[in-house]
Length: 110
Image 1: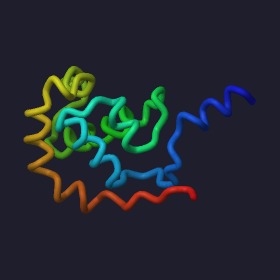
Image 2: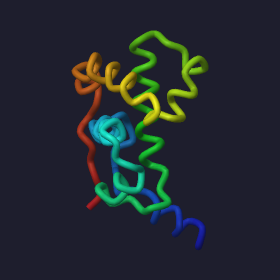
Image 3: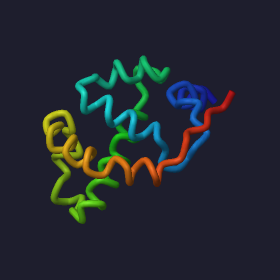
Image 4: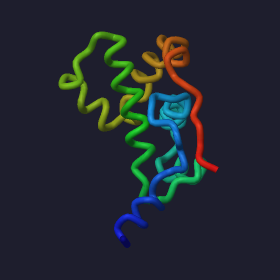
């Protein structure tokens, strides 16, 4: 029961399970140089939350698929997106309209 309470504290009140515009927004925060801790604070996640990492990876994997690139060949770029931020920004700029069309609006629990 304590473990479950800790998990619920580290998770956001995001109701949406699918790919949402919030995922793209988080990835943009990363590309402009915000740290995970800053993003957690902005969005109301706890410091120990992994949502920023998970949500941004979802965007990176979609971008790789749109470019017809294999995940295995680009694991370093996925693990260290800030190190390759100019490369990622180029891909995001190229495919942003497509991502926004496939992304749904996030819904939150009240």
